[in-house]
Amino acid sequence: MEWKGVLSAITTPFKADYAVDHAFLAEHAKWQIDHGVDGIVALGSLGEAATLAFDEKVAILKTLAYALGSKPVVAGIASLSTQEAVSLARAAQEAGCAGLMVLPPYVYSTDWREMKAHVAAVIGATKLTCMLYNNPPAYKTDFVAPQIAELAAEHANLRAVKESSGDARRVTATKALCGDRIAVFAGLDDMIPEGVRAGAVGWIAGLVNALPRETMTLFRHAMRGEHEKADALYRWFLPLLRMDVLPKFVQYIKLAQQEVDKGNERVRGPRLVLAGTEREETLATIRAALASRPT
Image (cartoon, rainbow, N blue to C red; front, top):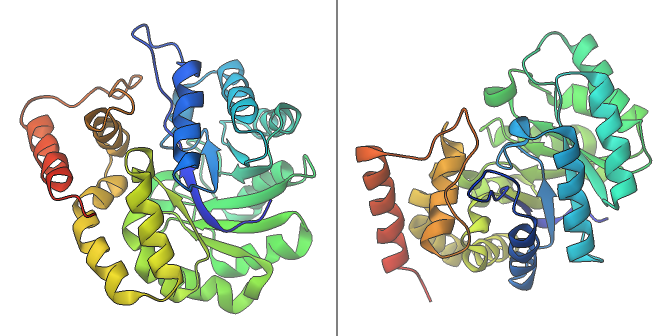
């Protein structure tokens, strides 16, 4: 696969009994592709992967690979243990995935020696092309540019990094050391014009689950250097895009999906659906944006 463009960090839909809704998952993925999205990333943080059993994860990957055909499905690989992460990577390859998004382990965060050993084991487990996921606020492990360059030198199939530190300077730093060897993706919704101007060539997007047309338009304006158009759309989009970087981002984005009739707000515990004033304020933000939706 080519690491560029917009990949949707797809949410995991649940039925009333909290089983995975595979029929809607396939429909939702195809709807986003029909709106120009370049591929799907499953089992990420937004996909509530930490609440999914191993077999559920594999079934989700199979559903998406079958539904999308030639369009790429990227499997998020995160686990408590290196052994399970390697097993999931191999299962993703068998399921028909085009690539892997390799995360640090859940819970345990330590020095570069141990974290490198973990992600290197996953990257080397298959021949699939890989993206390293850097999200220090969430996973407490920070992959800095020299470490990314070191991994890239040792693993030919490491081709991209999802940069979710919140610091657009990381894009510049990685580009300075790796050039075009590593494709840098913006990993947070509220850094797209900045990230692209710094050299990002892709976006792992969250609000695309509800608003793929606006997501694709914003990214295309940014990539074409159409700064005035990009900035105008960005200003409208920002109240929603900022929901992607808050602790309850899954609940916020699923509520936005529900408001545009593309899903429901069900989440698995320990998450709970929004309630009270928090839910009312979130709905007010979403509805205000939808009422002024640009044409």
